[in-house]
Image (cartoon, rainbow, N blue to C red):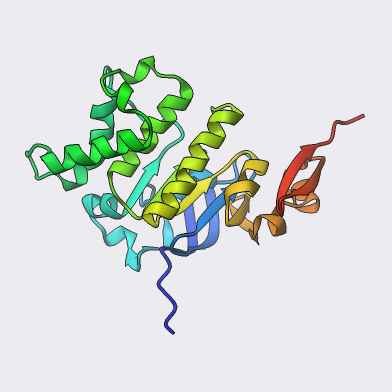
Length: 261
């Protein structure tokens, strides 16, 4: 049986920004339907890695999406296979929820053309799925943090891609909203056969949702494997300089900080 082509393949990925080397020869593979979480201390290069995979920053090495060189893909081509949500997306002033989600249909619109009835149907379906229909005419500035995060996710889902990149999607949310957003992503992954690559800050949340974890430190991959293999006391002490206990809950690692006496 032939092994399917990975959705994401990065080889010897190196990024230099402002004269500073951010990534040092990173290798990364993400299989179809997999949820891979990239973790690491502040400044490790997590966001830069996602931007390099997206083709948004200059990089050396190779990045292939669905078997194609990302640097040979036009912007509209990339936007039809890859949707991403940044930590702090740029929001046009005064834009409503429905119009913001509609921006996700841009890769499919003819040049100088308008959205079709089919595009509007996609937007409505997304709003219903994310429980945002009642917010459709509200401006984004009137929404709570959890509502905003769902709207940002909605724009990405409206692109109808098979690959979703999320840069710390729950960093500004309380625990309840974190669970709501990640449960939704997990359900959509199953229903739509999505592949998910995300950076994560909360290690217990990472352990609960990711299939595989990649740990970056100093712009290099220093560990990769299942959550139980990577999120360990020794690994966190070495690369985060953290005093923690890692306990097993439902076969998933939970990180408990240990207060210094």
